[in-house]
Length: 244
Ligand code: SAH
View 1 (cartoon, rainbow, N blue to C red):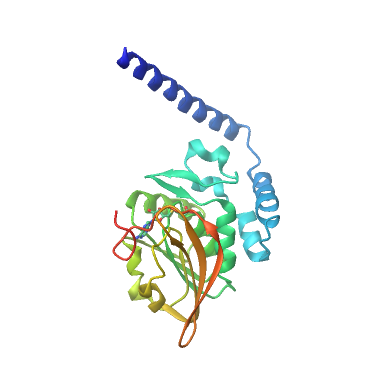
View 2 (view 1 turned 90 degrees about the vertical axis):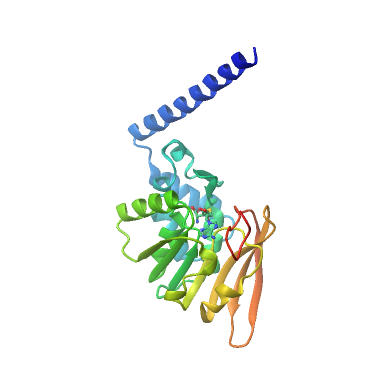
């Protein structure tokens, strides 16, 4: 009896996933107006919540977020939430991407380090707004998928690495900006040491389950810390992060 019920549940969930894929394909066939969805996303989720940096808004109007999510999630790519990208990881909510990017105060000539490539969507935004991006991801399949998506969009200023990003990228220091897109247990001195003077680090810090987003500015003889918002990220796992 138990086996029968389990088989039933399995076939129902298989049916749902097939249905989801078919709907997705139909939407593709109908040539969903992705651009229209993107413009609506920026107006309704980002401008309305107070993001003002025009360069950030323009980058988000331009970059095809649907190309960074798994095919069966494409219909949801412009929704107001994070989405699963496999391997237990997520692509951040569009508003959180906007908020973190605005906090970096990019002008266009910066060398940026990103920890947690994930889908590569935030990486694309950084590549639009800075001079060069150095991005590290610990899960090889995610890094490769992101690399492919970013290559298809022809970005030339992104450098990829697979490994534990909590060590930073010492061979390439110092950086003008560092962004951590996973939740850290603390503000790491290892990363501060790889920042230029007056450089900015944006990082979610807190418990494994909820964090506060901080902007940290490295001054000559002190570190300024500013609290931006509450947030929830997957954990930053590594020798200077959380244990697995
Ligand atoms: N910016 C990404 C966020 C992905 S979620 C996006 O919007 O798609 C955070 C990512 O950080 C995950 O892919 C996770 O595997 C990665 N990560 C966690 N700990 C890491 C570490 N120590 N070094 C590099 N990447 C790490």
